[in-house]
Amino acid sequence: MTENPDQTANKALDTAFNEWRKRLPKRLELHCEKEKVRSIQPVCMSFGRTILAWCKANNEKPEDFYSKIGSIEEFSTTLYQALSHQDGEKQSRWSLWHHANIDNLVELKTKKYRDGYADWQSVKQSADEYLKRPWLHNENMDWVYLDALICSAVLGGYEFIQSHRLGFAYAIFDGNFWKAKLFRIVWVPFVFFLGWILPGLICWGLYNWVPKIALVLATLYYGYSIYLVFRQIVFHVGYRIRNRKSLQGELNERFMAIVAAYNRLNDETIHVPSLRREIEDAQKKGVVWSSQVLCLLDNIEEKNKITWSRSGPPVLFSNVDIFEDDEVEGAA
Image (tube, rainbow, N blue to C red):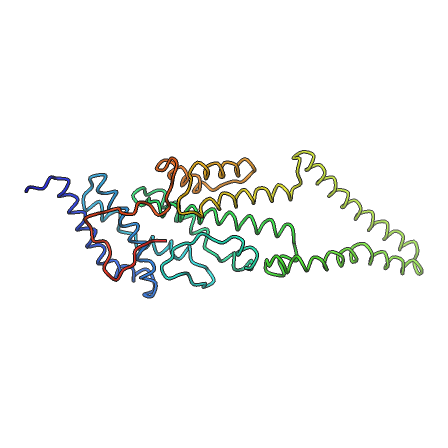
C-alpha cells in the first residue's frame, strides 16, 4: 500500500528524531558534567518531543527539525543550572523544578539560602529565549517557567518587607525571622536608651562643669531628635490618610497577593481564569509583574481557556520509540 506524502514526511521526521535521541547523551557531555547527563536528558527529551510535534503539525522537513533542535542541549543545560541551588544544594535526581514550600523557605531557611535558591537573572533570560521559540512551548515547561518566575517575586517581596521591618536585626541573623524578632525585643529598648536616655545623662553630668554648653548641647540634640520623630509621624499619618492604610500594611497586602497567585500553581490541574484573576488582583494592589510572567500567562490562556494540566497530554506521539528501556521520562 502506497504511503501518502504526510505519512512519508512524518516517518522522515521520526527518523531524524530517533537519530538525535541516540546522540543526545554524548552531545550533552559537551555542555555539562557527566554525572548530570541523566538529569538533564529528560529536559532535552521534553523539548525534543515538542519540536517534533511542531514540525509534524507545520509540515516541516527533517532539515527544519535539525535547525530547531540544534542548540537544545546547551539551552536545557543552562536552564537546569539556573534552576539549581547556587550554593551547591542538591536537587532530586530527576527534578528540574519543584513548586516551593514558601512557609518552609521563609520560616526555617536563611537569607543566604533564599538568595541562592536559583539564578533568577538567568531564569529570566532563558524565559525570554523560550518565548521567542514557539516550537519549544509545552504545558510542562510553561508551568516550570511561570512557577519559577512567580517564586522569584515571592522571595524578592519577602526579603524587601523583612529588611524594611526588622532592619539591622534581619541583616545580622542572615534573615532568620525568629532570631531577628527575638533580638528586636532586646535591641529596641537598648536603642531607645542610647538615643534618648544616655545623651540626657551625659548632658546632666556636664551641667555641673559647663552648664551653658550642656544646655546648648541638650537643646540641639533633643530638638533635632524631636524634629525627626515629628517628621516620621507626619509622613506615616499623611500616607495613611492618602492611602487609607499604612505603608507596612500596603507592602504586606502586595506580598500576600503574590503568594495567592503562586499558590494557584501548586495543583496538577489549574483553573486558568482563577490564576488570571489572582495575577490581575496583585497588579491592582501595586505588584509589577515581569513581562515574561504576563507573556507566559497569555500563551497559557490562549491554549487553555478553563483547565490547564501542567503535565500536558499523557501521550504526544504514538509511532515513536522516544526512550530507551533504561531511560526515565519526565522533564520536571
